[in-house]
Length: 124
Image (tube, rainbow, N blue to C red; front, side):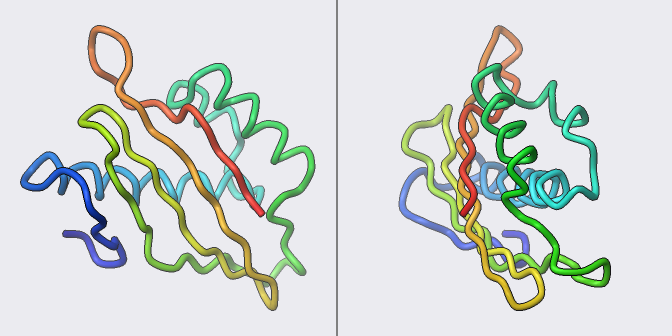
């Protein structure tokens, strides 16, 4: 299992390992978008319409504002669980300077190709 990924109850075996790695990779990309280090459009193909709308709203609201240009986000372990074989729910603590935030998201396999897409995202 990748470093920094916490295993939760749910599926086990290779599919479980892949879900944890997927959640960890997506968490990093999501935090980059929320802090302004990456344009939100780069995640458009990896989000559903509702998920992208939520992400865009969080970006506009400045959900993960940096205190200063030197503030680099530090991600804690990504905690994930699979409520079903085609869904992963995850959360991660993000430290930005003296501020701490939580980011939660849901990934689902969709379409005939089974592509993973973010269908919901929250940040506080």
